[in-house]
Image (cartoon, rainbow, N blue to C red; front, side):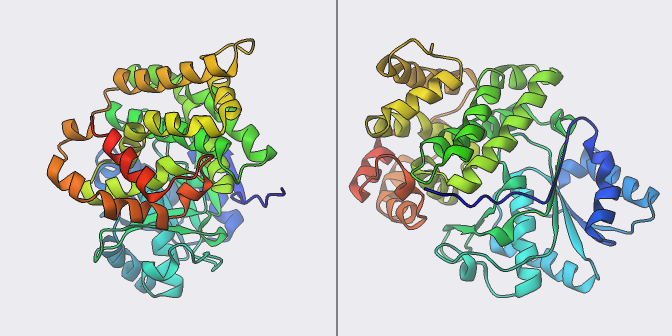
Length: 386
């Protein structure tokens, strides 16, 4: 099977790579950027750092800081209007995955209009959007190198999956120093999100040799360093490896697709406002255990890439170590159960049928090594309630 690979036109990677931003904008022929971020980035000085850097190079800019942690369509519209009325020619997305996802959707609506539901899967976004320069400040979502955005429909609470090469940022700056201030909870959730991206990209039915190698390398960078990066945020080497691993995992899943974990995670986030990385973590051990019988060799490869199984050990031993590690990782990083997070049991179980339908509609479960039925998904939702 052949793969068509989509990547940003420019990637600037390394310590203080953000200093290259003015030159990057010149290369892109962008002269008036709108800086899209959030209040947290503003409060710790990252927004002013970017805008001061631009000003020193005589680049005029403005800012929009009212992005949401789990963006919905209504949250985008003020930024769309600001962009259209302000004469801007590109967006600099500074923040985590939600900021970068918001930037993609804003860039799409600002140029082409309509509603986000017009662009959700199965529509493929081939439309060229406003140029996006993505500067991630967390190591996990991979949104800076993906052709994906996820936006909640305000009318239905559906987390809409929108995909297509038009959504790919034209440039990304991967500066791990910007992740040093991420709180431990966010660092943990985004890190497990990145690990999930790598695992699902590797076992996806749409995987190919190129994306497999990216995914394996990503696992090798993320798994041995995630606890250290969360517990000792001043460890520069651990942070650098996690940031690069997350970036590679993003490239892998953007081109090979995610699978059942993500398909089931989105409805949990939409209905119960569980952060995306955390809901992936809640699901990952049980979904992996469900899927292993259909791809035991590939899941064994994951265990070996993560450094938790020896190459001389059998696949059966390796996948047992994988499940054990995923459970232990959640425990070590304080991932709560759904009940501990505060999800109401009756409300959760009343939503299972709808969530299963929404998971299937996203298309992601169809990429899983073991393609689940609707009843399988409902039973898995039941199992993760613990």
